[in-house]
Amino acid sequence: MTNDATHEVMPPSSGPVETGDLVLEVVPSVMRVIRSEMRRHGASGMSVPEFRALLFVRRRSGSSLAELATHLGIGAPSASVLVERLVQAGWLERGRHPAERRRIVLDLSPAGRQRIDRANDDTRAWLTEHFLAAAPADLEAIRDGLRALERAIGGGPR
Image (tube, rainbow, N blue to C red; front, side):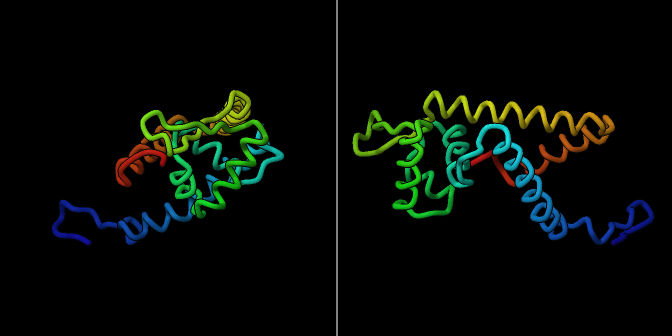
């Protein structure tokens, strides 16, 4: 699209719809690789929902069962069963909310935190190793693009 000689032609693949399509294509594949590496580096032996639950609680310590269920896209009864398995495995702790006694809050146990932190650290090292071959300009473009994506979508991890 051009207005006058001072404007460049906008390629057809640079609009919001095409950007959204690219995000929907790239982000899930990147997340699959990251989850795979994290499971390989410390979360083996646990299901994907268990792993996702621990990551969520790591990011949102003190979250409720309902918040976890919403994040995982499952009902409260299924989330309750999942939490019970994680508590029995020694990776998650349940407690009472200090102001709302009927509300259950979730936190990682020391063993759960150690396991998830190890997986995170090892995965970060794996990513770093892969980024060593990238040109500095490409690394800067990736960082800038990720920051722009976060600004455009409005917020960080949920």
